[in-house]
Length: 411
Image (cartoon, rainbow, N blue to C red; front, side, top):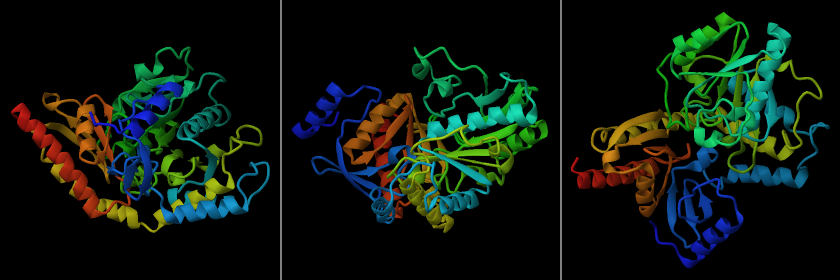
């Protein structure tokens, strides 16, 4: 356990006394951040390989986005979508062009975006496909994570997150991820959509077989079912393409994005969809006081413009082996598996050398912030703007921790 200063201990104690324990944070209190680095209240510097669950894809305190946000705040901050505000149209055009979808509906959080996509799919099923009212079924995947609202938790198989929150919303069925045959067997006449993450983040960065997304797209088109890709974590450049579905050359019917769309500065999420599906929304059927506010869309437009250059996607492709080759060399010598894309990795720890939280503690002591997503799995997520030196540093420190523990365990 890292030794805490009196200042850090006081902050943690006060938070524990008055806050709610719905997280189990690492024992560090951060005060500043810049690029790939953060600084705690005592001046200790850490390489941030958590990136706020991919919300800070462009790093901390990115001046370009800060200037955009402050400039817009000084002009007009919020009017609600009851009125038109300059800038919304430019954002909508930029994100639809980046994704290849036709229209966008803007909300605030990833869970809201996924709830909105569920609503769209159900109404499309009733109004367009002709499913009997109240009978629409959506198929999701085992190991999914789409948020923690009561509807979304209805089709989660994380019992810790579900415990005590029922009764749950009907209308969902789970099948195994990366199994097209199981998916096809589950589709029936009342199925309106298939909802999946192109890479399952909370399950440990589980990457499906190449061609899986294309097969799901072909299947859903053939069976008259919508394909919904949750790109809340995989989108906005995280995996080496602007959106992960683009890696397989497909276009889903609906796509949800959030997190780094706001550059780590402001909450913003979006549902992107085809003209046909998005036409189910008419005035009064959906909305949000803060959704699509001028500050959020100004930042979102700047993020889309940055990704439209392609420079960060290219950088991630070049740096991918710099991170992954040293990690994969440890499989069988402290690690059991390494998965991922871009600078996003899921690393499984051999129980013989310890648990994932223990490895995170070791890395914290070496100035690297990481977080486990499972008892034996760590997720690594450097900002997509990380330099080669920073990627090499992460790989070097991770390897050092694993090799030290492996030696102690006699591996």
